[in-house]
Length: 161
Image 1 (cartoon, rainbow, N blue to C red):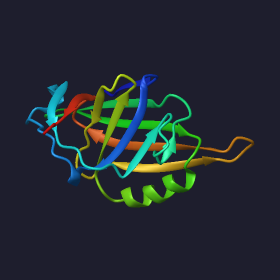
Image 2: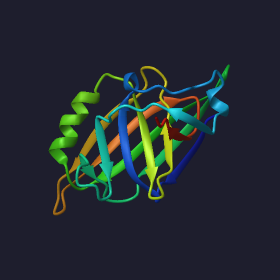
Image 3: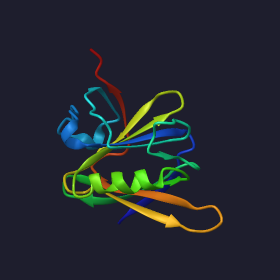
Image 4: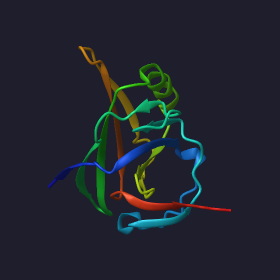
């Protein structure tokens, strides 16, 4: 039996895509039960999407949506996450950065306006990125991120020195 849930992430104002090779996440054996993680070492993002940050690769047009499906496995559940982010600027930058993320594993960090960060943890060889263009009077793109995880979103804090 598969359980599917779709939520609109109205509170998300910043999204980072970071190769897993640039991060150190203190993930315990039973990641499925994890709701929060501290002291994460997170590298420099390859792609950033933001509602108003001028240095971002793309500008978020409206609230991202996250669709999650659960599939039972012998050791728990595998969750298929699909994050869709409508963007209205940075088309060339997004296409260029998509090429840099093709074929590698990456984490997704979601940040709220209040600064709270959430991690979409990715299992090996499961993350991918697609960009859909809509050509009409108001050209826009949708960045579509898919990955598999053994957990839901995990609240994280970054390690400080």
